[in-house]
Length: 290
Image (cartoon, rainbow, N blue to C red; front, top):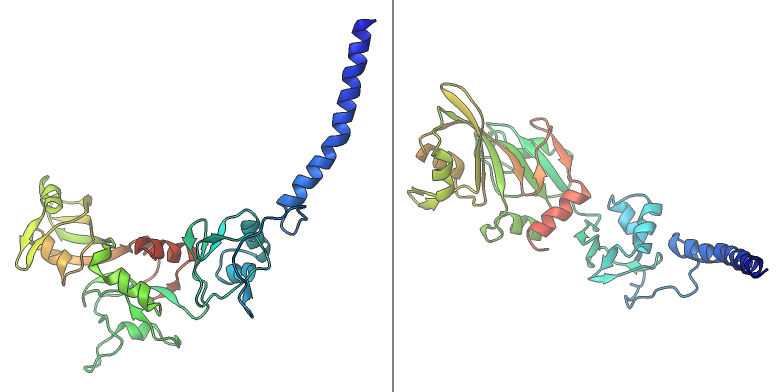
């Protein structure tokens, strides 16, 4: 009889737990869903900007995702405004002056800012105009109303990735040697490439205007008389890649820049542009401490 009594008491406790469980799940689900009702919602001290734009609308316009997805990000505490986590879907912000981050990465909140990647062909000047009528990068920006800054330069005969934008502060930092943004090139050089060339380039070679070195170097392909090498540097002195490889005994016949910081040239065709993604822009901000 005592065993039956214990069994009956256990069953009763199980029934009571089962009745209580759905209620707990209902509260948890409401709190987790965007728009759900939390009995004690988390608040923050961020002051709404009078006439500002709803936070989820700013995120969606920046390409972060759909409005619904942006609400989920906010509800999960993954969005910051001026360094403060914001969980209110209706928070009103000023995208022109406030810094907004998702998962710690800054997003391009301003709608008047343009960020482009251009695959510059050889035989084109890195300038917006030329008094002698030679081809310039402006020839590939027809229909672009904004005045864009080119981030650094590529030699007349050098091809590949250029970044253009009307974000003056970001453009300045990306081009400034202080921030050491890495640039990667593919170079077709005279071969064969000796085994010690990489070590010499990484250690440093004395040029006429001072020592220079590569951050990374590797041979991609080689034949008896030619080689394709990949070289990465953080400095941007004039003709630095060509001069450095020539000093190492391997003059360059063709040079293509394939990466600037976190942005890769990829399959972008020569003479065409594309808009940078929000992730790429956020990575560029991070690379220069913005």
